[in-house]
Image 1 (spheres, rainbow, N blue to C red):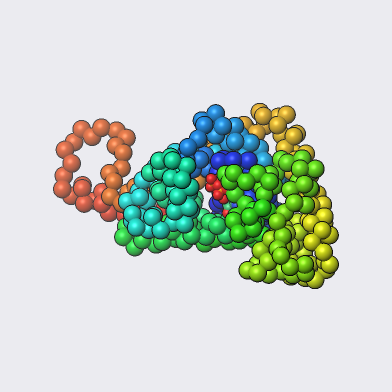
Image 2: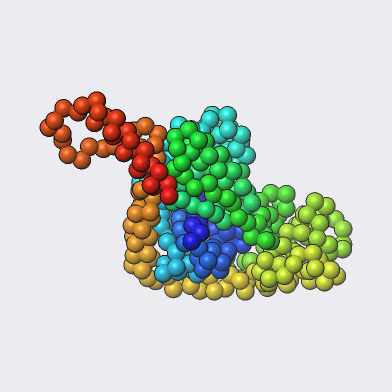
Length: 361
Ligand code: AQP
C-alpha cells in the first residue's frame, strides 16, 4: 500500500491556503487511499523567534484542526513530531550527507532569513538546516508520496536527493518519495498581495483567511480582496493574479474549474460574493467540529498518544537501519565477557549489512 506522510508547522493560525493546498486533500483523498501519517511538525516552529507557550497552544490547535478537517484516527496516524525521537535522530545522519551549498539555495531559507535580518534578528542555524529535518520526517516512514502545497516542492526535491545519495553511498536504505499537489489551489495567494503566498506567519492579516475566522470576517476579507486594473473576469495567473486567485479559491471550494468559472462572471463584485459564500460554506463544518473537539481534549490527547506510538514503531526500524548503514556501532545490549576475535568482527559486518537490506525491503 502507498505510504503517505505530510505535516503542518505550528507557527501561526492555520489558513485557507493550508486547508485547500494540503489539509483538505489529506482528509478527503489521502487517508482513504493510502497508509497515511499526518504530523504537527512542532520542531520546525523553533527555527524562528517564538514564544514557547504560543508554540504549545498552536500545536494543540493544529492537531485539533487536523481532526476537525475529517482526519480519522481509524484510517490514518495523527501525531506530534517531537513525540517521536526518530525524526531528530535521523536528521543528524542526513546532515552528514547534505551539503552547505544546497541548504543555502533553499528559497524558503533565503526569504525567511532576509525577513529575520530586516527585523534586526539573528538567523538561527536551524532555519538553514530544517529542510534536512523535513527530509528525516519523510524518509523515516518509507514514504512514497508527500501531499503538499507547491511551495514545498523544493524541499521534497531535496529529500529525494538526500535519499538517493544516502542509498548510493551506504546501501539501499530509503524509499525515494515524490511530492503530490492538489489540481487547483496548490498555491493560494494573499488576498491583499496576490504576488505573495497566503502564509500563516505573514503580518498582513486582512489578506489571510484563517480557518477559525468568523463568517462575517471571511466575507469582509474576500470582498476587500485586491483585484486587477481591468474589468473583465478572466483566469490569467500572470496578467491578473488577484482575480485568478479568487477564481482558484472558488474552484477549489465548489469543485469547479477556474478557467470555466472565469467566463461565468460579468463583474468582480459578483465573483467576490460567490467566493466569500463558497469559502464560508467550506469552513463551516471545520469550525463546528473544532468547537466540539475543543470540549473533549482527552480524546485529542488520546489520538496523539496512540499516533505517536504507532509512528515510533514504523520509524524505528528504518532509522536503526540507517544508523547501521552509515557506520555506527549498534548499541550493546549485554556486556560481553569474551574478548572479540577478528573473525567475530568480520561476521558482525556481514550481519549488519544483512539488517540494512532486510529493513530496506
Ligand atoms: N498559501 C498556500 N497555498 C497552498 N498550500 C499551502 N500551504 C501553506 N500555505 C499554502 C501548504 O500547507 C502545508 C503546511 O504548511 P506549513 O505549515 O509547512 O507552512 P506554511 O503555512 O507555508 O508556513 P508559512 O506561512 O510559510 O510560514 P511559516 O513557514 O513561518 O509557518 C504545506 O503542505 C504547504 O505547502
